[in-house]
Length: 322
Image (cartoon, rainbow, N blue to C red):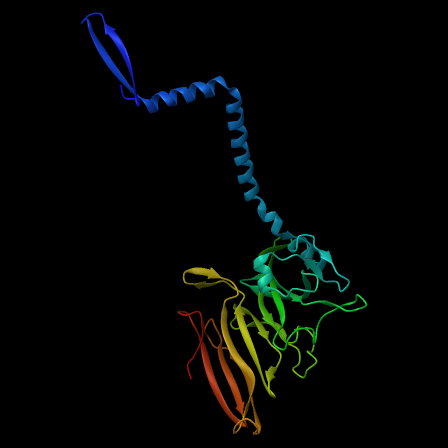
């Protein structure tokens, strides 16, 4: 008899013949498991507990939006919630421990932690709803011989700016604020370790502003301070959308839609020749379209020219037309 099969013999009294009924081994094992479960009521109790836990988990997920509600845009409440009740240093910065990925992207200070400041709050409207853009700066902080903390101009390398974090809030009907976007390290801005004060080396401070590139098209402009090498300076402005833009079929917030050099220098004839300055101003042309046209007015060694850009619905960026 094969080990995988069990045989039960039953005598047929009428035909005086034996019938062989084959029951697969897997059926036998199933019957044994059912018998074991029925004989141990604790298994049924545990099953009910697990079922209840799953139900509670779903309910918690449904109400998790409450974690994104802020009673006000108070600096301390924002930092406490977004940075998990982190400590504060004597500069007033929030001190938090980065994970591996965050340590690669952020400025790490003398103590192996990140020191972050809430730098500014700007308000804008999107489709009739009042919203807020909160800007954080993560700075490299040093401790001098007298244990005094220091940050800012000259603390970091020439092209090392502050790490800029961004949080976006939407005002609710009861005048509270709901968080719908947060990134600790969105991009870098500034020179010599800072963006919000003059870098101390002649380049001036950087700027962050909300600009409208359409009647209902709020954007965030990050304008870096001037920096360069060998006496040649340059400065760039980058604009990101504050409304969702479909990118490859998916809605994306803070998608980069335009960038230009607002100031640049070059030498007229080789290394030691005269430095020529090229200055560019951005001008918005308000037309009847949903998105404004951008004109760049360029002054290159007193020669004035204009470049025109329009928003492309296909590529979701501004493209040069002239």
